[in-house]
Length: 341
Image (cartoon, rainbow, N blue to C red; front, side, top):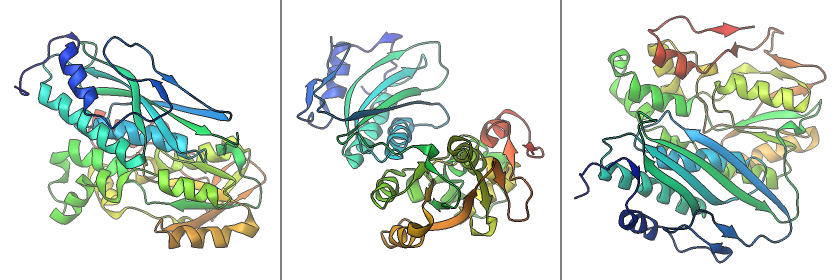
């Protein structure tokens, strides 16, 4: 029965009720939750600041449900706030089988359960407007005391740190979608790249919340445009220059191998799974040591200075990219990475 194709339009009420009924029990603050006939949710929110992040997921396959949860949860967590409530707009192309929808909702549910977050609303339909499953997610969190950590909190003298290697997400996407170019890679390397969304994974929720607890001045999770764009965004938001010690960067070696095989530059390749941030100089050593002790493999990779831009240790500008390397590679034959200076 689950192999049948879904008709265009909204889901049948019975199927939608069944899918929503498989979700975790609603949290006590959820006054009005996801159910057939309800077009909005209602949440009892005490005093504090509501943190909201939204992102559509288009570059992954059947794990798109979990991916949407994690990517949006990351964006909330880097403010120092735990992700709690999730909405999802799920758009499926004509011809989608019910079994795929069930797997999508299952992966979404598992990701939410792992975070302690809940699905509170959304919309699902089959439409010719898309050619592959698309999940536009929105995650909410609450800072009861109103304190929210910005990306732009770094100041001259701060230590810039990295927790989690790169490029993890890019490795998984390229390994899935660039098979012919990867035939020469050793089997274990390719297998590690294909499993990268799970191991080491792309969630930075735990290290972000830990870094916030330890007094981070700024946090950011690089995504499209890779590590290079994430560092540039941190510098621009903070109004500082970043001086890198590039030898300290934590690279995901299967990701670098996949990039080399496909012609992608790892500096500009999808980087979810990596956390960037800054600690005040007097706090940095102890905080990074504690993060590593908690299993997050953090390291200082540079310093913030007065000025603008991101520079390597020899004073040359760090690589910059007009677009993410995954998109470039998947849309064109292998070619020289398009860095700009």
